[in-house]
Image (spheres, rainbow, N blue to C red):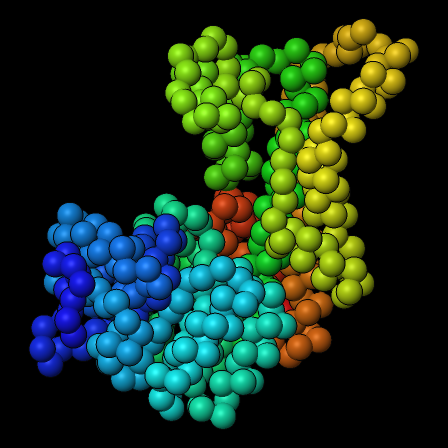
Length: 420
């Protein structure tokens, strides 16, 4: 292949690579380096060739030159892979996925495996898998959670696919997934669609988790705790039953001073301000599709998910800043000037216990939704395994998932479906 840039290299003549990845955004680049760092050779490709060069250059800086090989057209990329070929792609959900599948369907052969690692609607994945059946190409729809850091160092991976495809991918998936005392944070969840569904619900639970933390913050802030006290308190909570990634980073966020301020109107850096950064952040937020998907599915399945639904509603309210400003002018009339006196120690304990109980409810709601869909579609998802693979790598990782894993699993849950 004639290369367009010296930083892009093909595998040595006659040698084929273990894995292929198309789509080299932040997640794609980091997961490619994760694969390579675990000892697997990987071919990478992208619609724009500059990102191929960037990925190969990053690999060289990390001492992975002999494991990462760049290609600037899909045909050469596919030809560089060992059979059965394993091609993962990371592109924006929707029409872009269909376009990528169409291209690779003409290049792959019977027995090859095509993997979507994005946040796609599960019914679309089911349709796409059926469309590939005539070519006997196995399709995998796989949720990947953990963001940029997780992709590079170990995400929680949620694949739905034929068992044969999972077994072929298992060595790479287990090597690249996050590790906990319960093993790699990946498992075969069930047939096509199940991985998308579990990842969708994971994101819905994340919505609930963040809203519960926000409400705990609101109560304690109005009761008189300042940011330094809140940071210390959340740090203490993170040493006990509330230990989790979101509690940990909340403690860090509360303590963050206004050291680096950006004027977003012109992207110029401003001089450091005084006080805490949290107090200067606009109280408005957006919402992505997966939260809405989870609530819609809860309604479709007839499963109550009030914590997740309330969290989505709170995001809608927060986003509509202009109306809230106008409403405040009216609602402040007659409102008490300050909160009544409270016993701070008792309130802190009550909020801690309420937060823990509400988090359990949020996870239980999500798992019940997965159970309902699994029963409908015959996926056989083991709920204990869902909780287990969420213990590391992902945003909702938490200590108490051990308890949920045990509660949702029978002693032989690895070999039967009773935990559903």
